[in-house]
Image 1 (tube, helix red, strand yellow):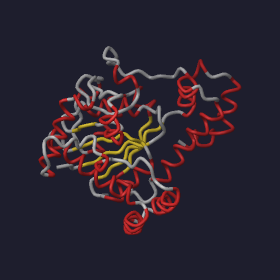
Image 2 (cartoon, rainbow, N blue to C red):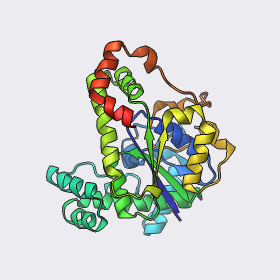
Image 3 (spheres, rainbow, N blue to C red):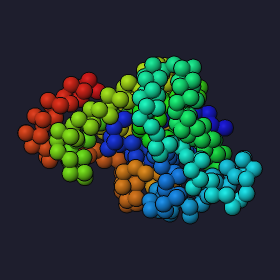
Length: 303
């Protein structure tokens, strides 16, 4: 039933949670956030679904599990959401396998990747198969033909594309690196040098991962543009996804979302309007800006 798998790529703190929540308001779209963490959320019970409930108590995810149990013909007592054999992304992979896989991913050849994955990176290969299975179960439960995964990880991006390129579409979300760096400094207590390098590295890897993916399957969206003109931006996104634009896609509704992971703003129920966050303009000193320009200025201008 999954007509389209939409993957949101880019650096963290670039607005993926915002875009994810807006897309989720479409009657044709089911957003699931950073769904690669689904099994971990279910096993540890330490993080909540965006609806406010633990994953193992969330009616939506329990329906998804029940759908999976029926599809696989297993007992209703089998906790598939917790089962490590059903991981959507491997937890530990050897260094050699990772290096070989990265080379295959950058080349972007599906035949080569499948060969390498089956022999050297079976954990990633199996996780990709698991992910496609879970995507199908989610779409059956939601009744939506379009699923949005905002994991952002560039390696996962390419693995999913090479595993099944036909339904795959990519939204590359970009935000001014100074804003992302300021957020990392504020929330993670990073110094500007580290924050700037991390932002540039994340975007560099996202660009590399797009090698070999046809232009018709890629769309670049800017966070600032989304916030300043949400209607025009969301209409452009809808055109790319070939789904009708709906006015509900301009309002943040979090209580009906079932995203995994993401920005804490997904729990702030009173926050329903789209607002541009440019605190970096006041928070960053001249010295900070000088360091950023030296470390990541070229990439910031390019994007």
